[in-house]
Image (cartoon, rainbow, N blue to C red):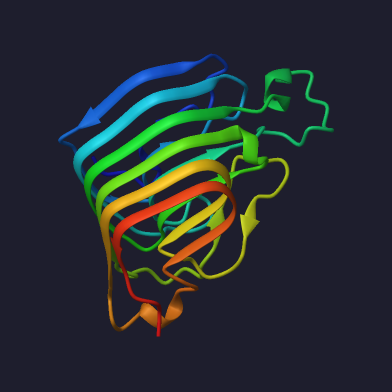
Length: 211
């Protein structure tokens, strides 16, 4: 798969629940986002596994949602909760994520992995197991964490980390490793950024800090 948008996305305009999804033995190349789980109009995405895949992403311009994330899990409402949208009232509803596993993936990415929710309760039970992360910055675009579609905040304009984990419950990363491209390693904020995560577990996770 190759796309200036996301290769596989679950939940952007789905008001109901999405559950029991398996994606395996796929190859993503030169895409803006790789695998994305991002409910925005109510409903819950649950029991999803991405396994045995290779994902290579890069950033494109801001006309496209994203910034080269290989793995993307976010949850919020599409519009701000105080907005009125008579044509699409479901866009005031918050989506939820409960149970996504990423297993045995080789990732080459400018922005690697993003987990973000507008409230901690909206995302829980995310597992990263046997993930090989290669941080390969290749585009000209300034760093940004792109949360669109989002009526609360569209961008966080700061350097990326290899893993950016903000506002969620029960995240684990095991038997995984980060490799940096030496020429661009200094452009990144950190290897792992963890903020407002309840129950975060690391086991056999190898990485070095940006220099």
